[in-house]
Length: 85
Image 1 (cartoon, rainbow, N blue to C red):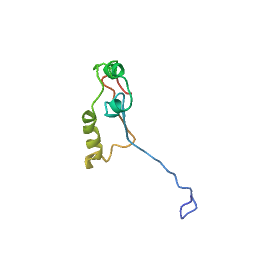
Image 2: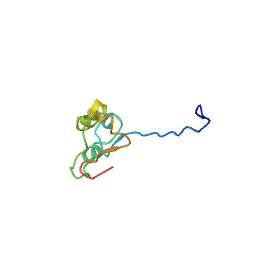
Image 3: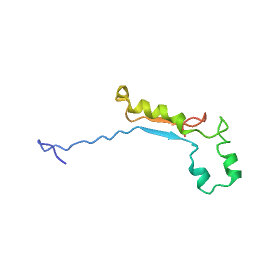
Image 4: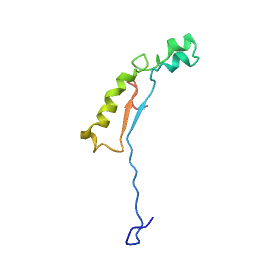
């Protein structure tokens, strides 16, 4: 693409993402996982359990707020105490 002055446009795409390690959802139960796997799910995190969706909700609320408009191109991690996933 060229501008009105025949100079190429430069595109910069920045995105913000939320990474999480292990998150409990109802799909674990209905997805065919054995009871043994369900009991061990998330036990290898420093917190010893998988995360709950409500524990990530505040990250998404902050990103949707007007005062977060300058936070672009960032990675927000929720690894259950193990650092960035």
